[in-house]
Image (cartoon, rainbow, N blue to C red; front, side):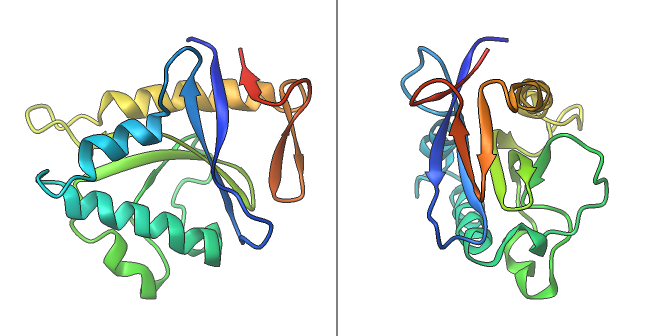
Length: 166
């Protein structure tokens, strides 16, 4: 896997949960931006699904990731929208055809990865982005205390301005 950089997505002191995103080194846009540009377009058939995912991220940044009920806490990468959330959040995930993958680094820190259509219509298999997300998880965990540390609800680079994971 290539080197990648962790960038701020929505990082504020007052957030209950801060979100970061990954960008491959040498590529101009992040994996989240690729997802956004592809699906968050009113002409796209999945526009409302993408809109719901970005609204969910905003909700979680204010209310915290604890709103998500995780069936498999041992899993590395998870998907937004999840299959189960607090009851008042149901509108975020009912019938959503897209998934944006993430890894929870700490109780109040989430790293957004790549995403795409939930399942291949022919095979029923998860998209390649899920496999890529699982590889990111391994590299991100290996990078803790090497490339970055956790300070409160933020990630901090250990050796430069950017958090670079090799």
